[in-house]
Image (cartoon, rainbow, N blue to C red; front, top):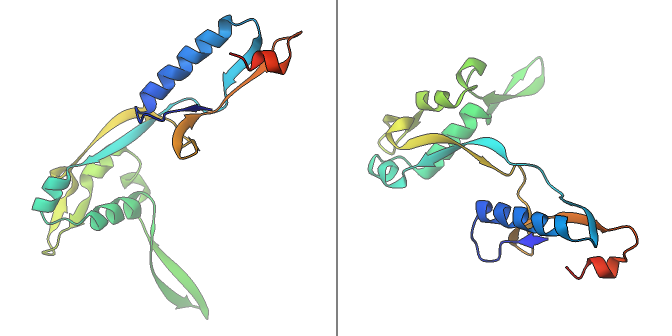
Length: 160
């Protein structure tokens, strides 16, 4: 396990992984050394300016609820149909929740009951990151696998 005990972040951990893989590639005691994880993927990051949101009277819970209900779903109520209880879920219609720019069309209710458009307090951007949150002893980590080279013992291989 390669750990980020210094809290340097994902990019530093990835750089350390690449450096370690470069070192192990040259070591004759090791073979098939590889990360046991998934490559970074594109992800859309929403950055909320909490000071602007607070000035506009938009609670944090309202922001989270609006995003999760529009792009996921939210339980609203039950109704009875034909003697059976059915659940009601709320979400944005498919054409309005497919692209990141659809966030700009969202409105969030503030503490005064007025609707505030999402771009007034938040922006979005593309970035990349790990699709899996890996931890070891509470620290961000990357699991690395490898084997002893043919004719070498595992004890020799672990002396890297």
